[in-house]
Image 1 (tube, rainbow, N blue to C red):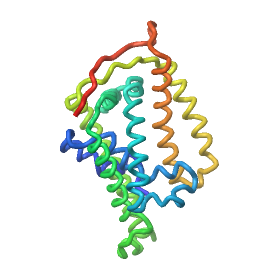
Image 2 (image 1 turned 180 degrees about the vertical axis):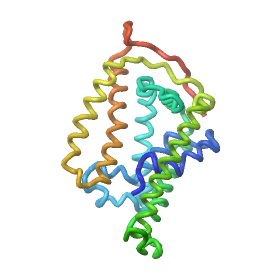
Image 3 (image 1 turned 120 degrees about the vertical axis):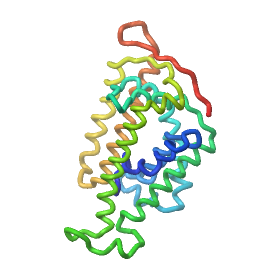
Image 4 (image 1 turned 90 degrees about the vertical axis):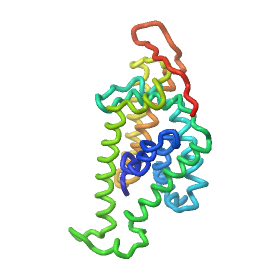
Length: 254
């Protein structure tokens, strides 16, 4: 499959770049991953068939909204502990924690992301309905397989380019303002993040024979681990020592 992230995000991030006030960036990106999130549980994707159009409402929408809310709750705390990484300006993403688009914008963005994923997969999977895609191409592989490989690479490169564009121009700050106030406790944050990530990755090792599911599980772990770290910092509360700083900002309502 085209990579759940970042490749599938290439179909929806341009919408936010075009009209940032019309779309919920967090919901767009998460929505574009939702059909694949059933891979987290081995075999669940085959049972639920989350790539079918009907799943847009009973799987993609509720899963996408819940994931968006969890991300919104934790992203500021997580981003405050990340390195800036130069042109990527990763800490700017903390501002997404204080953005509150109208509910219809969030719901619509989740669905747009999910639809873009399902549409893309119609051209890049063995179940594609297009006969030409099943013809054998270079190296004895069907054309749908070449579409999958090439779109994965091109999509990832496109997203990287967009991230650099957003970071260099500080677009998140220009649109939403500075990130909200957050305590920064690196030792606690990274200890909890590692405590979730390392055992989680170890638990997936018996299923390495299933690379598609394994990649998605690692992707989810890479998101869930810093969420747990941010939650630990928030629950611990502020303290006055060299390991604690605060950044300021106000909540944004669109």
